Structures are given as structure tokens and as C-alpha cells.
Amino acid sequence: MTDIEKESVIEFLRKENLCCKNIETFFISLVHSSYANEQLQAGRSDITSNERLEFLGDAVVDLVVCDLLYRKYPDASEGEMSKVKAAVASEKILSIMAKEINLGNYLFLGKGEENTGGRDRDSILADAFEAFLGAVYITYGLSKVKEIFDKRFSHYISLVMKGKLLFDYKTALQELTQRVLKELPEYKVVQKKNNAFVVEVIISNKVMGKGTGRSKKEAEKAAAEAAYKALLRERK
Image (tube, rainbow, N blue to C red; front, top):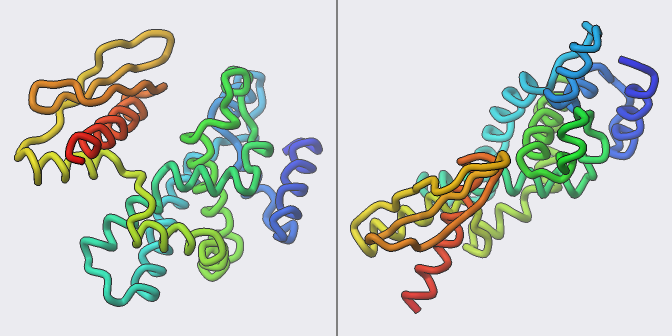
């Protein structure tokens, strides 16, 4: 870790009221694969991306969200808890949390990602936030992760439980079409160029929504949201 990298990590940790402990692990949590690859190609050998920490953080997020749901909503069914967990642990919510702590400002990105708006991209921010929580878990244990979640996630869990927030539009759309139309939505890639996908959602032989994204998954999510809202308008 260079002096400049270390100073940036320390600034981030102090901003989050975390003592400057295990700095190397927190540095790794902020390293995107594009930055690690550039540094390795330049001959540096002491660097790795945050992908392993993200994998750990993903499991930690699931555990803490389930713990919160179990303790605070004793009357919620397993099905309700599953839906809420999927929404609260979604890329959208995690990226919102990352933006609230200005995580994007402290990410180490390769030049390509930097130039194409990677600091504001939901997928990168969500992954980095999970990696950050993985580093918190390794350094301070589960109690500290729970403290962060109780402070930042309880509000979103409450909104999702009340039906005031919906982010898993693919699941919501599938449930709606199965219940109302007795069929499943069909996703079709209609265009792919300049690292962007365009996907249409077809329901009852009709295009009900279209979405664009840097990946097929992102485009499908956007298309599902458009189709879900269009179906709700039709039913009204």
C-alpha cells in the first residue's frame, strides 16, 4: 500500500468513526478489480481486488438482515421475510447506503472505470459496500456490523415491510403475471452495442416494458420495473 492509498483509507475510516485498525484489509475492500489489474500490469505484486471480501460481506449482509427481521418482526412469515431480505439486501439499497457514506469518493478504480462513471455506478458501489462490511466483520466482529445495520437499514426494512418500497421488480412482476394472467414474463435481448444491452419484456405476446443496462441483468431489471408499473396502470 502506497502512502497516498493509506492516507485515503485512513481519511475514510475516521469519517466513519472507525479507529485506524487493520488498514490493509479496509484498503482491499476499496480496491476495484480494474484498479488491481492496472497495478498488476504495471509490475506491482502487493495488491488484490475486493472480490473475496465482497463474497464474505454478501453472507454477512444476509445474516444480519435475517437477524433484524427475526428479532423486530416476530409476526412476519417466512415468505414475508424472504421478500424483505431480497429487497433490503438488493443492489439498489446497498448502493444507496454506499452513497450515504460517500463510499464512491474513496474507491480505487482503473482509468477505464473512472472515465465511464464507475464511482456512481450502483453495481460497483453495492459490491464495495459489501466488501467494506466484510472488512468490518473481520476487524471488529458481527456486533459492529449489526450496529451499522441497525443505524442504516432498519428504516428501509420498515418501509419494505409496509409495502412502501419495492426494488425486486423481476420477482414482483413474475408474481403479478402468474396471479393475474397465469403466465410468466419473457425477457428478450433486442439490441447489444457499445457495452450496453436493451431488453424487452413480453407478456401475452405484447411488449410491456423496455430497459437498458451495461449488463443483461441490469437491462432486465430496468425492463421489469417498466413492465410492472405499466401492468399496474392497466389494472387501475
